[in-house]
Length: 216
Image (cartoon, rainbow, N blue to C red; front, side, top):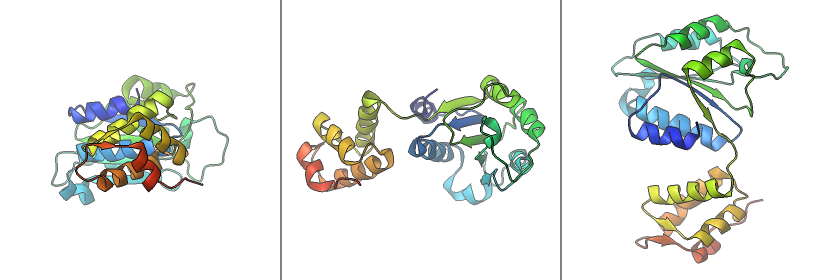
């Protein structure tokens, strides 16, 4: 499943209890986590019901225990566990020894009042591992990969639409070049361009050339 598929599902209120987000496109990973947060946790209760664990520094058991804790002053709890290097085939010395059994048990029977997100900024997961197989069976697997030309064009059009604007094809192509295809930079520039054109409906090539500086 792509991040765009998940974004559509979240808009419809279709929320899965366990997500595994993986891939090297950092902006798409972060944006997907943000959209899950907006769908799951109220702004007023996020201090109580949103937890982020860095598994390079913190034990996996703590994240699982948090997911098994009832939410406070809200309907759902969101737990994000980032950098689960145990899902990859990379050979590196981890600072933490993790009890993977606790997560395996949780994935098979997740708490109905929590959403658990594994945030894995790696190109590939090791599909030979038992945990990866369990995730593929029970979790929503979401790949944040580098976009091709058509996907990037659709992404830019979607950004403009979210700002209530259209963007000309030539303008979108120029934006990709000037931003060196960086999705985070493109997103920032679309917001800036949308504000700049004011009441006009469409962002033009001239607007992009006038307002967007070439990235290094």
